[in-house]
Image (cartoon, rainbow, N blue to C red; front, side, top):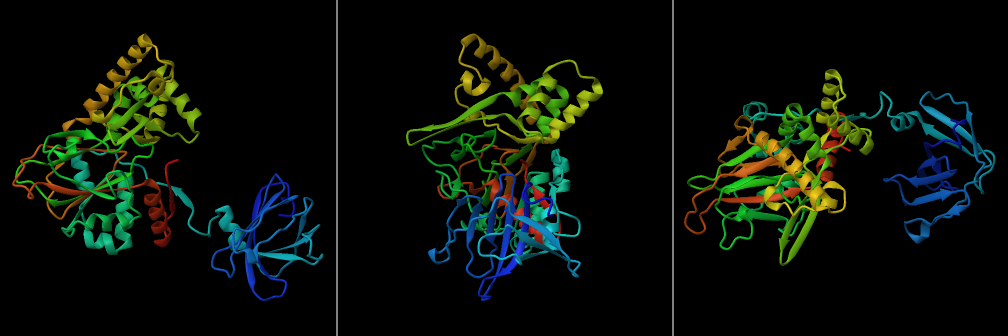
Length: 455
């Protein structure tokens, strides 16, 4: 460790006592290439404060003024290792130390903390990738994912953890025996994290209303789509609780867009590349709100970032790959599909710059638009394959939970009954961050690895 300081980035932790010995302090030091040291006291210790410390630089604490600090860290500070009889302990002695410390200043570090920082075996559970997604058919989904009891979901962490993993692997599950009241959907969401508030409200109703401004609020057939793609950050998880079902019609339909993307890639990899290259605009255009955002139909995220993704797509566009290499590239792309954006009723007018990355030129825009339409029609054909469509007539007391950036949902037309008795679903949304946070917390609590969210 002495050789690492101060020319390489390293984080170390120290338990010290205040000069008067009145209380202990647990500090974490980070010393980096820029001869920078940051220190902060850990939570759970008295009079917590945070300080950032650099040579020839200072910053006051963000805590109470009574505990503000100004500390100079000499740029030539050095550390040497001191012998210790404790196997789980490392001791360092400092020279060229911070003003106020004499040459006897020592720091003691628990080896378990260093193992934790290094993510070494035998410490806390390692950060691990999420399990692979299952690209399902309707029959497979029915077998793989049985309904989950509401009471178990609400009270048992193991059940909730499995449900959250299922949302990653399959993207879709149903709760049963949900209390038939308006507050139930909020309780289901908040079991994971805070509700996502939108201009529809924290929760919202799906039922037919007079003069509806959205086809969802009619009794008409509603095609496959995803919600709120006109937002920069569309909701990740959607919840629909059936409070009242229609007497006739109104079945809910679901299909796996990532399976459709996989099938398209194997059938026509150039069409797949076209949908991944082109950003398509979506908008919500009403007198009181106007939202607009453009997403690729198929969003990819390879480990190497944008350059790796672009290089793989360019390889698809060319014809110089051997069959074996082409299969390797295809598998890499299938594994890197992060999300899908498909909501035809909410597509905005095409603009060359937004969709295809160049200034509007009518001839060129029309050429690229035709290529995109050709690819989109092929994708739509895979979405509508009968064996991939899960149809379910939801009953009162059931709640569907699904990944809104993966699972396409639709609805068959239904008969409107007497006023106040029509089909009624109560809906809500959840963002990605609280979903992944709960998944990690439960994984840590239950002794499994802490999953990494997609980059």
